[in-house]
Length: 615
Image (cartoon, rainbow, N blue to C red; front, side, top):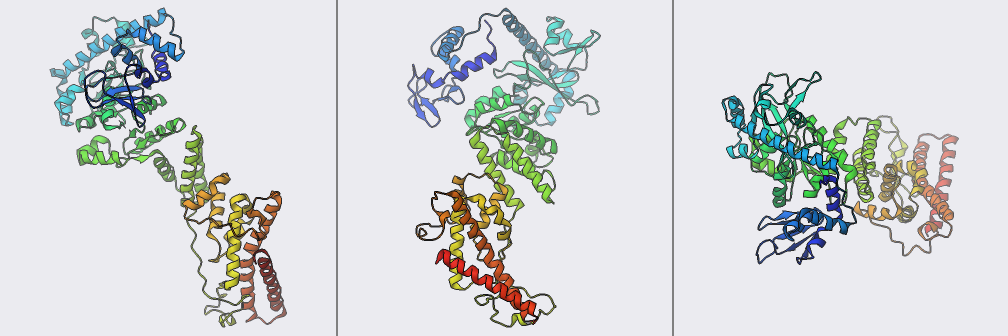
């Protein structure tokens, strides 16, 4: 009976591996995994691990490795179909009935595997013949070690449209075309797909040859530099990763998988002793491939070329990964120097430089921020708004709500720091009397250049104490009703005075950038940014219903708006009064005197209201 890979994957996903193994082997919890003394060989200390998350067991002592089905067959001695039926019954799945079509396809795939193995042997023989001399010279110039050339199965396809057909004469034309080794033209003519190319086998997770990649050697040739097999019954380029069968066991030692752009990059890394690298098949990393990587490690490292195309490839991978993000699973991105690929870096700076680059790989979030920030000029408000829109569009694709909220907070905080840098602090230059009367003759004459003199204001000690108490109360009120600041934001931001509570300005900035912050998050936001929360214990006797649990929120909001009007009004009136005082020193007209008296009355009324609220 032929079972589809998709059905078997579903079975493995539904079965908890540790529960299967626990029936015959005692397991101990070790972090996110389980450990035990290996049941496949005698040992005194445990080297056998079981990972439910990754779906496999592995022994670091004897190398035993497999999934739930493999455990049933190897440890319990069951036949494959018996193991599948038992696990399927536990998982509540029906084993598919025998399908003649599926059986025929399985037989077909088996025949195509034979074609690929025969082609691989022929390609390898060609490399060591006179026809393959140039290809062998090329590999030696690249610095590939003999053992690496053998391990990765380099071969050569001669420049002959019918050479493979003659060499594989034991297989009929239909199989050669279906395997992708030959092309059938519209007129019925057939010819070899790979000609005059250095050849590499592409293998599945079990190490079976399922496709080929070929690199042209003639620099002047008009053909594509790299050519891969087409999709066939054996090969789906979006569901396979080059070198996975070697990188998978290596990743268990390094707890890392490196994703590079192409198979020559993989081999260059292996030549330098880095064995945990894989590559997609000439396409952008797919969702299926990302899931394959996450079965090996939680955070694979992407290491694409340092040119613009490499960076775009990294962003395409990020865009596909964002909707799939789940707790503890992400990507890291190593940024190669501009214009270099992994082989260039290894040749120029050595293995240590590559190790350092991989160790220092950026997080997915960091890479996303840098890419979008640097994607376009940000010289105008519209440009900056465009950056925020692009970041928000990425965030909205994330499906996990916790991760989405964290990305939104982090990216928009970075945007705010970038687009709204901290305002300079204003320093008062002169101290004036209680209502702005100058304690010097500064306002009795114009400045030396004839311009209006600079006006600075401060508050007397008693008023300063009351004003700061009012600011602290408003902060407490805004923690309950943050949206109340909106109609007052512009007036408060225009206050050029060191006595303005920085917490109020901080709340305004964050509300403008991110209007939907939940109420419960505001205290933590203030604390994380170095702000002290106001103490409410001694405020119960004050006329501030907005700092207490109010039965009528409308009354509390009305009171808060009055407090905000007072808070922005006091420094505004004082500044205008200081200017009026200065004017009276130069202008003795009735109009100047009347303006001064009107502002003096307003200042007195505001002071009385402040005392009524707090005193």
